[in-house]
Image (cartoon, rainbow, N blue to C red; front, side, top):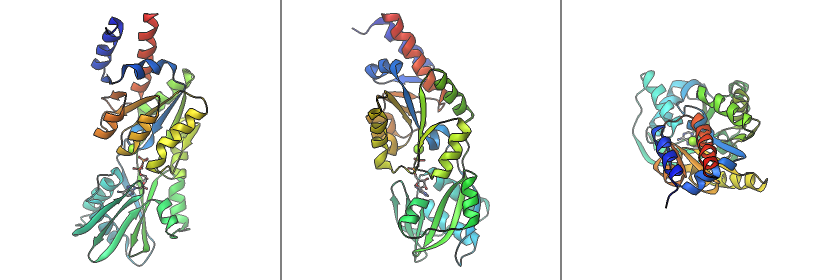
Length: 290
Ligand code: ADP
Ligand code: MG
């Protein structure tokens, strides 16, 4: 039989939008020593606006944005949505696209008007030997903005800078965890300069940047190997293996089905403070039982 106290607490939690999918994991929540948050969409709103388009080749900036938007109209990524929106605001009509494919955790590619178009992370551009040393781009990155590169027929055409907003609730969640002697950490596929700025803004001491999707679970294993009981909080398909690897996998509600199916707890509202509520509730629930 299910102990009564647990049953009561989970209905209380359901009312607050905290859905417990795995009771044993929920019980472990009171022993947590570290919480690893995904950055984009979890600690931040995951809504990107384009702030700058820096032309790096022969094509003018607006033409670059038009080509990038054509490609990104086929992608669900939050960066893609920001680029499509920016082109539309500037009245740039994106042309037809064929052969679209995702480059997982790095970008996307397609053929547009007979040209091979890619929009990719700085890490991917570097791997392709397309590193830039543009002072304007470096300055934008230092502001904590996410930079992606447009590559046209194998050549760098532009750097597109996007700004995301940190959720105001994230700072409170980080502070509350620290008061509970739980170490908050951040995990992201985004560039180091962006991660550093967000970490500073939130008061996070620990973060992992430029983590490829297939490496996220390994980072959780790394935290466990330090002897810490760890929760992972994320929303994306890419976060699913890390959610499974952690001692307590927490999916945020607006997340993808894959993340939700991989989680032990689901936060219906996308509020990082609800992670703290889960820990409080677990502590309160299992304290009453002994
Ligand atoms: P996160 O870990 O922050 O949720 P992702 O793993 O989804 O990020 O993506 C990591 C990086 O890959 C992004 O910061 C971006 O540079 C690049 N990227 C992935 N998909 C796209 C896309 N459709 N368009 C542009 N860049 C992309
Ligand atoms: Mg994410």
